[in-house]
Length: 43
Image (cartoon, rainbow, N blue to C red):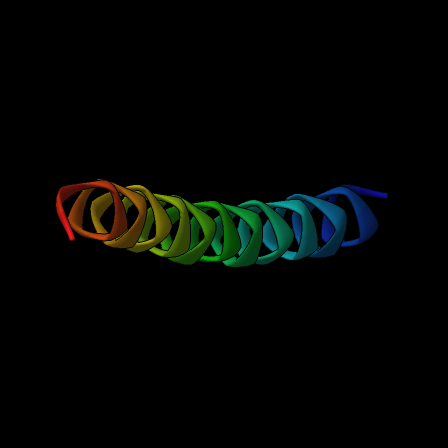
């Protein structure tokens, strides 16, 4: 039983890490888009 719990925990950790990376790249895209919008307003 402990073995299954450990594997499940490892899987959850890797899924969480992947989700955090995805969130970080989404934030970068949003930041870039906001910067582009600011530049477009200045033109």
